[in-house]
Length: 127
Image (tube, rainbow, N blue to C red):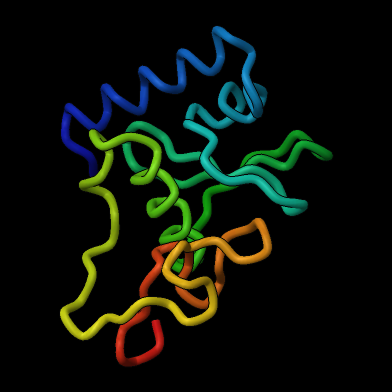
């Protein structure tokens, strides 16, 4: 799914996080991905191949995320980590406007804005 440059960048960031025993290094090790979002439901990680996986730190289980809403949130967050990863961001439609819920920040009350899925914009159809 991702080109070689994206694969290398994700792998580099993941290896750095694990080496430094940074936040969610257990999720990175268990999923083979880069942790990019966490809440009470677990940690979302994106693998170098573009698969989104969820890690549950209570049960130590890993599952593939198939819900398109959470996949989009994961890819939006991934794209915001580094300019080299911006290619995975969703394309903003021409009719999109700033999200009225989060003021175009993609963040609402300290978490991902679920109205715009963290993008900071919504299209005419409300997504």
